[in-house]
Image 1 (cartoon, helix red, strand yellow):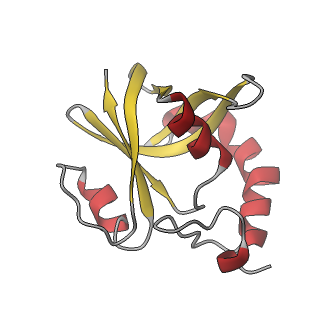
Image 2 (spheres, one colour):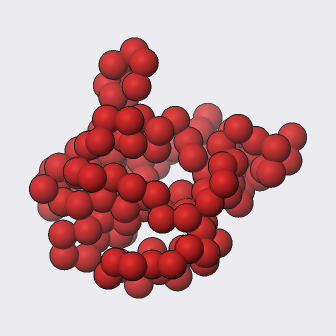
Length: 137
């Protein structure tokens, strides 16, 4: 299956990694990174609940913060954790400096107009991938 045919590939939120790399990351790389995420630059854990089951989940991500806004590049497309956060309207982001409560999550489509002041790494990635943008409560 190609990335363009993958279920995570959504309008405005393209999946740029091939599915085999996503499978490798989910199965092996995330488990290797989990013990070290606190010392890796930009790494954080987003805590969210399943939109149907209500089960709590934790996903390792790379987050960029500027002032009261957090941006997360969605190179894997519109994955389940993204759908969960959008459905709930909130999430917790555990980073090196503590826990942040995220509210008002929204998608900025790839190549779309950026109307808010975002961190520069997120702006650079926004040309090719969608962004999940949320406010820090």
